[in-house]
Length: 187
Image 1 (cartoon, rainbow, N blue to C red):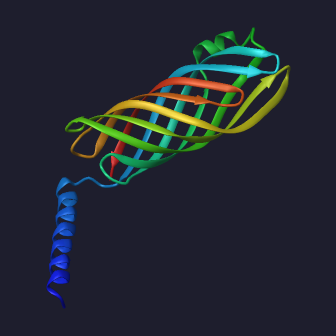
Image 2 (image 1 turned 90 degrees about the vertical axis):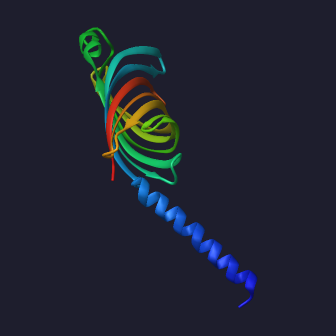
Image 3 (image 1 turned 135 degrees about the horizontal axis):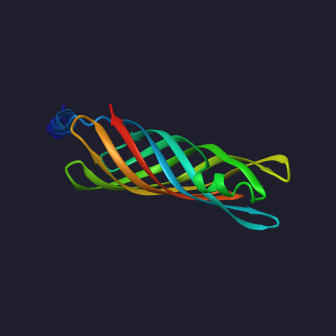
């Protein structure tokens, strides 16, 4: 074996063991499960025009796999329905019983501000199904479109995290904007 290849192997093994030991010491797993509840606005659009569809309650469940300390991928399930204002105006609105659900996948990026404290962004796509009643007929539509979120999170040493995020989800007939509060666990 040549001296150069022996040195390359030793350097490679040293670097690999230092990377593995750093990750093991930090105790940061690549797997995160989380969920959030939120409140926001929804705007509905049909062929006859745009409607302020009132407010919305939203929920979001997700699994995130971190490639490194800054970037990862996320898959999730989102759902929502009209809120308090939507219930109050449903008597005079043409659109009733508006709700949606879907799945999403995003790229995730995180910027650490301090230990446990960070800002993040999610950009990706969502497949959503919107259901509602209009002119006493049940209607539904599905769409594949943009999903985006930006937020702040604090992760405790135990692995639990808290986050506050702004979500934007434009669909074919419905545009959602809202603020979600969530919890997550890194395992």
